[in-house]
Amino acid sequence: IPVDLFDLVVFGGTGDLARRKILPALFKRFCSGQMADGARLIGASRRDWSDADYREFVRKSLSEFAGELALDRSLVETFCRCVHYVSVDANGPRGWDELSGLMVADRVRAFYFSVDPGLFSGLSMRLQDHELMNEQSRVVVEKPFGHDLETAQALNAELAQHFDESQIYRIDHYLGKETVQNLMAVRFGNMLFEPLWNAQYIDHIQITVAETVGVDGRGEYYESAGAMRDMVQNHLMQLLCLIAMEPPTFFDPDAVRDEKLKVIRALSNVEPHHIVRGQYTAADGATSYREDVDNPRSRTESFIALKCHLNNWRWAGTPFYLRTGKRMSERDSEITVVFKETPHAIFGQEAGRHNNELTIQLQPDEGITLGVTIKDPGPGGMRLVDVPLDMSFAEALGPSADSPDAYERLIMDVIRGDQTLFMRNDEVEAAWAWTDPIIRGWQARGDAPKPYDSYSAGPDDATMMIRRDGREWRGVI
Ligand code: NAD
Image 1 (cartoon, helix red, strand yellow):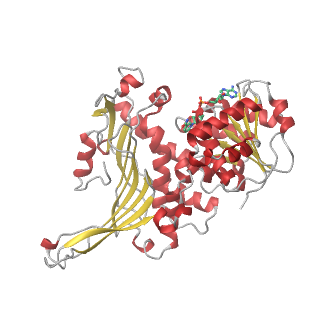
Image 2 (image 1 turned 180 degrees about the horizontal axis):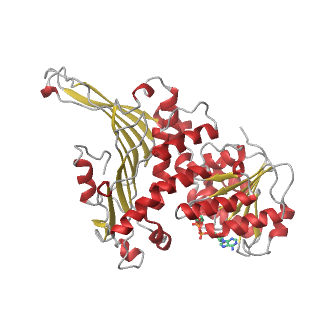
């Protein structure tokens, strides 16, 4: 079903994010018929380009990042006819009258700030000065949303001067993943799980987001951020919220975000011995983190594992283990909910004891698996084994279940005006309010990250941290 007629203006339309994610996502939605006739994509950047130059940039981006659909030249050319370009300066007058002249009344306007956050203020001011915002206008902002609580508050205050909160869409692309939304469907659409979804039946929950890549040309940014700011404060926190939140009354943006906010506010401070920071070293022909960021004395973490608790009725006593890192042995993002053992082993100790586990896999493939215990087949007596009950979406739902990219979903939500999967100002600030003292803590203690080999499981201390509790990390790492 096509969404309402729209103009999507991408500030930073010639940048890396636009090229790799935004343009291919919009093209795929166009191919699936969601872009109504007349809807437009307007690239807006500093480069002095014409429409024709930008269309060439779009063609290249699609051929590289839009998969097989981009082989259909007539589709690509029809899409390119919806593409325009304006050369604008976020910090000066150039291009704004032209952009203003290009706008058409009576359609949704979405302004995507795919630029450095330092430019948000200039863009917001000029959008307002040129009266480009109307009732149907939205702005989309990318991470990083602040560097700490103070900068996030300043950014929120800046945006609030120009836009209503209902017009601001803070993207966390993890929330656009099909499986993440399915996590809510599984929890709140089935009777099976919710009665067990608490400290009484759940032993602990793990969230792992492991990447094999290093800092890859983003060294300068990463060096000032580290894994805690780059991944935990936003992506892992959002996953934690969805897994731990109370059922909202409705599937409504503010009802969902109110519940997520309560989770963040219930997070306890993290004890220093429940934090392991790591930094990758050269191995297997790969460079070290310090070489990648060109700082031989860097103390920034490219890996972090931590154990935290939620101070609320549902989760009292249940540990949440989070870990994320770069240059790990596998690319693997998953959430594992480990249930408690049965209270009594009726088959005797020799049959084995097992925990049920619900695994929500986000990368490389998406799917949900429930591990259940059954009898080991054969005449060997009553021995127990775990088998997976799989919900691989591609298999369960057929070819149409091809998961759309997170950006496809999120951009269409912006046009539809649905903020459910976007972070609200108070959520972002609460997440920083939890993150800041943890970072200040290790800075005050002068803790250095532990070295770990590139393409490994991270520092041994992370394994030891969870083993001390009699538990093991799940997943392939
Ligand atoms: P980039 O450096 O590749 O592109 C920046 C864009 O901003 C270019 O199009 C440039 O022309 C434009 N620009 C710079 N100064 C300008 C000015 N004064 N006026 C108008 N336009 C100007 O950056 P990117 O990698 O595309 O990232 C954009 C934003 O998205 C950043 O905030 C980044 O942190 C965030 N982000 C990027 C990625 C990614 O994968 N690249 C992922 C998550 C978040």
